[in-house]
Image 1 (cartoon, rainbow, N blue to C red):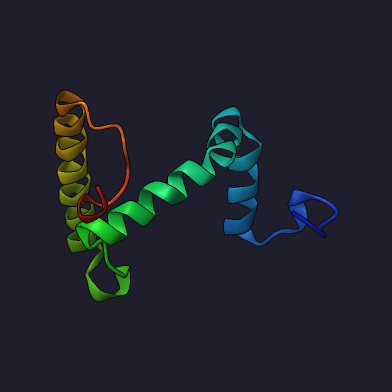
Image 2 (image 1 turned 90 degrees about the horizontal axis):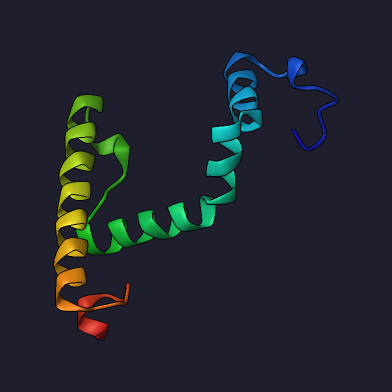
Length: 92
């Protein structure tokens, strides 16, 4: 949307994405994109979240679900142990 005069000049998918970004939930997600990018950086570093081109779509979705489950279990354990850092375990 940087140089476009309106969202209607976009191709179909870009138009849908632009409309989503203008919605309340889209704005909220956009404002939190740094946190989301940091989370995916952790998931890639610690849990080996890989490039989606290596998997079929269903296989990649399953891979992401397992990675998120492992991450949430680790975060739950950290909370109960009183660990308040996002550093990798070997840097603690």
